[in-house]
Image (tube, rainbow, N blue to C red; front, side, top):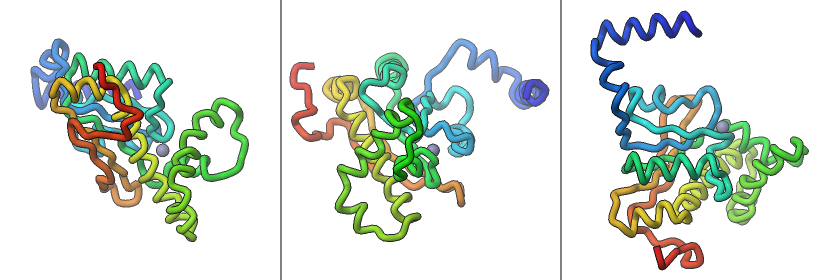
Length: 205
Ligand SMILES: [Zn+2]
């Protein structure tokens, strides 16, 4: 990896002599990417973007959990300091986290805690999930529904609601990447200012 890095750095400078000096003092990405830790789903790689263009947070199964200080810090910084205009939650078909959550196995307390959030998505959509007979179709749909719920979880945060209230241009997107064909499928979107279930809305921001 270190020798590959030397080649990469040399190649970059040959193609664009000011590449590093330009990026060294400036980071102004328009996108925050919340993706899966899976090694096959790299934000820059699959969207053809360059260093400096996407602010990235990754965890198992791309979850937005309201007690996750790591994710919330990234979101806060991206929205309030970098002023990104798009937050993308990108899941992927064939996700091991989603697959594990559909089983009844004990993965140990820490992973059980994490995967529980995916089981909760299943519970919210029990009727639809139980109508799907085929196992693979069930998994694929749970990947899509999990992404959808994470986008809604973003809208539940005071960080996003405050940005919307102050008319910041901030759109939330839910995407699913196909490992088999490399294509991203948009599955859900929330425009700036969208109202969600009122119990989650803060009126005194
Ligand atoms: Zn995954």
